Image (cartoon, rainbow, N blue to C red; front, side, top):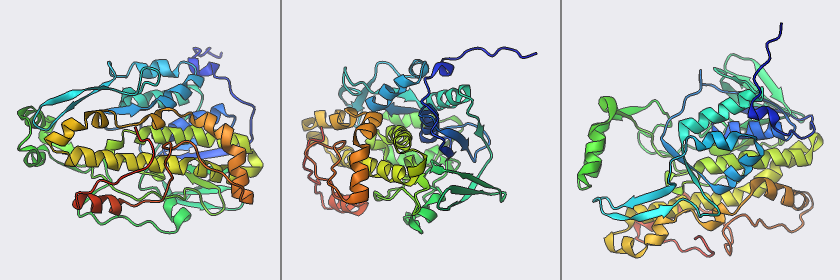
Length: 405
């Protein structure tokens, strides 16, 4: 006897006609899960693997920018679930290190609100929504190597098994093994004892010397750290990498696998999710016969926008870390509203649909194409982390053309 399963909101999703494209996603983080759900909605055949033994996440609050929760509306019932994990009111309270309040600033705008969401809550809702669609994450499945043929992407697992699909999406973070296939090298910066590992811990007391002159409130919070132990997550600074697609076009990176972010950008999670929506749409537009082109179009449509968002993180960091009291008070609006309207006024799915053909023609035939999803009035050029560090050491502010506000 078959026991009827309760109907979920996810089961009412309007799925597009099947594309016949098989997709293997490596990594069930925020970007990977967002992509796998949207890829399912776009009509692709999906499977997802994860090296960890179960769903687990770290961190507290994260910011979901307006473009993302707008596209979530195509997922019946999902946004309502996410709203249960939001912090209200959605605004940022900014203080100087000595405890002086500099004001409260809204997240986004009334017409383009951003959401402060509990990260674990968001992750759980994504995983459950995928499960409600019949998408089961294969845990304890570790990708040891990425390969490709003319017709398929291949993932070699740590136990020697091989998984293949029409396209493999590397969503497995900064340490992704996909770098070797895509760039044939991956240079890690030499920053002393830095660790890209959530399990690397240290005593909370180690933080106290850095806040010696700060408000006593901050020091007391540190002293109340449970078990006096905290995660020593070192920030890894990486130059923008314009190539996210393998030589034969069968493996593509999204999220932190392709681009890392400083927390001061308040955009890392949103950019990973935007990647997911964009890539799923590009694959649907291209069809099964043009998967390599779809991946390259997605890469072209996304890179400059992402690199500008990364640069914004460094610009914000410079403001936060080098502003003295006077300059801080003079630039309150700039410090409080640090995401920019250009970041909020975007639709990754609509942009992919509207620009796919023009971008494809540019890649295939060299016709003119210019992205319009980045800073208005800004002419993009490649930049490096070294430029920012040198400017900070010299006390220079890197000037930028365009409206970053």
